[in-house]
Length: 118
Image (cartoon, rainbow, N blue to C red; front, side):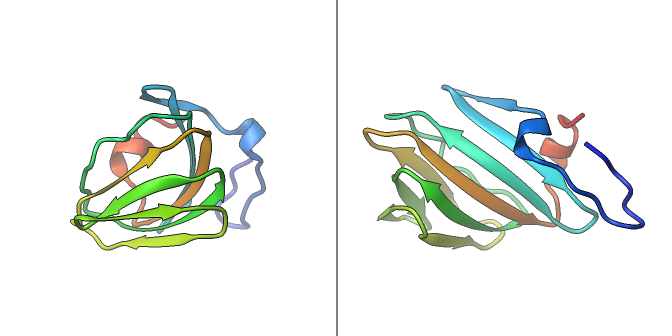
């Protein structure tokens, strides 16, 4: 990935490191100084653990569908649906009978993912 933060940069998910999140779930994070974008690919019939983090997150379902738990409320989401997760709110997706691709944006960038990036 070309990285010149003074002038900006271009990349493609085909060039971004794939991180293993377990159970076949992969993450592909890209970060700037103040925000991070991550493509999340989840196979059918898996659940990410309900979790919290100190970063705010906004996400988009790109393809497939999932049940998304947010603050104790579960909703089925499909392509084009958006979720907002304030810092510290418990959340997590669970796929149904098909793969689901999500794009998450974090502010500030997540240190745990930054430490795993190339």
